[in-house]
Image (cartoon, rainbow, N blue to C red; front, side, top):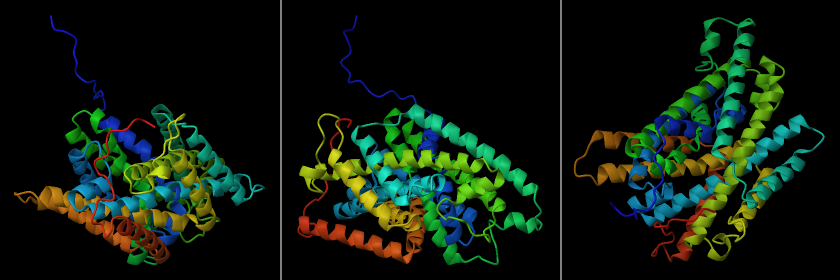
Length: 449
């Protein structure tokens, strides 16, 4: 009779392919394009469907690179780790600095959106009052260590699915119940010769990338997935496809109900007005749904930003005494949560949603280019046998992300470049010209905070 096993307990591999896809859809949220609909319509001159689909193609190539790099670094799962290990530690730091910008702006634009929507519901309270309220609420709840469980996320996703289904029915009833000008009416959301501009579409696509932010989170489930070498890659790619097609259908229905030639009462909350046109009660229903969705995203984004700052503080990329500290009672990076909350509130008064979204994508696209470059180096440049399947996806992913990055708004590019220059200057000063490592890419396993 054998004695008791001394094998170290492992996580249970219980997540199949469709479980991973569902997780990815929940993280990204099925209502993702609704919050940026007005910005996309105005920036892309009405070609919202086209921008969503082009962004999907760009993200598919990047998703392949993320999935392949997750095989090589299943526990690290970070763009700056991939770049730092595969290309150069200094470039890894630059990628990490761009991610800090990305993570810091995410809660900021969520505060902007929910505050403007709440002001639509209760105009007696000014926008700045709602901004202060939500910034304090996000910060207070995150300091308490409150998390949203997977079941709550799944229930929220189901509720969003019901609202989306109702919107599709109401939009169809509205469109077919009103006169239109023939077949051209239904193709105009894809291509309108009167307003089409390649620069406008590329500019809109650079913002549409925001719809897909979060797909890389699937790689964090590598140790709990069945056949992770196959399923993580497939789930990452298929999640982008599912979100892309669903988002395209949502904005297509919205454009038919509210043609781009008609201005919106408010750009930031434009989709809510579209929903209200198809059926009056949907104004409140969709508005409340998006407030809840962005509230959850804002809370999660603030804690994610605090978590990234903690990791960089612990590895000495930022002052460790402040950013690397953990509050002992609740075991959360309290200093970082407050720091992000203060900056988010300040940003909510300085930025509008359009500029904030573009600046967020400035950092995200740099990280995506880094992941594609890392995948190219690992699986093509360093391989003795050169295969086209290892060359084409990361090369195209890098090229498309670069093209979108170059088509971001000029103000966003200037602001983002200032942020990146400050990070590079700090890194160069601290490492005396990057002669020593600024970031420890071999971060040990952490306790849950």
